[in-house]
Image (cartoon, rainbow, N blue to C red; front, side, top):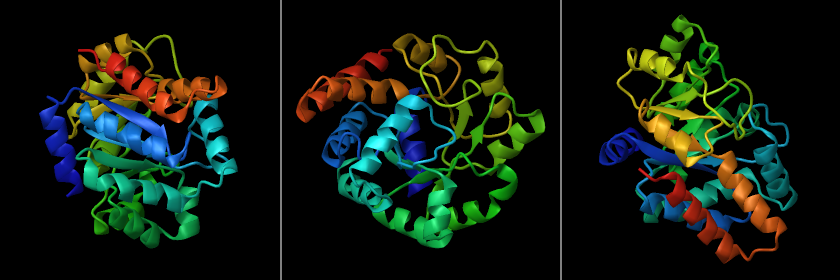
Length: 265
């Protein structure tokens, strides 16, 4: 069902869509569930759900802070899977777990993929698994009917970009700018060429993330790619509201407003 769901939702959005990222357990599971419902209602083809980890290598300070908060409040992998199981009957969008392979390895590759698939996940993103070492991960994901979504860095060689594109399923994740996740004031001029090159190697949608944070950047990405992935801007909105003592229900409403602002076409 996973790949079919991605295909259907990208097609419904004319393959030009906003894909939000939320940290599981931040600010709490109930609020994240409501945010996923809001994103689904806006037609997001997929929602990325970050699994908190104490030693993340791909995430910038905003998302790392959300990880720390979730972990300090007892949020564990099982809670992320429970979150997916809770929202799955109510949403049609793809649900993608983004996490460190260290977590998967600790649980066991086959066991983790099986439990993620059973919970209702559609795909996984493992930023710290290079394509050369991903064959077993792809096999285990496929056995659990999960897509394995590969990431392509702007510094990747043409041969490596082609390899990642061919090895991916669901969609391909083009990293907009080198470095960790986080809001940036501009997108690199090479981005359009990077996306066009990937499209020569795969029929899958190509989505752009890492540094996408404004409605204008989302509009620019929609001109060249199939989806814009936004994480840090959403997490920052949540963090700022929490520091201001904003009630959870209002935080959810504010995030919904930001999703609509970013989704302006």
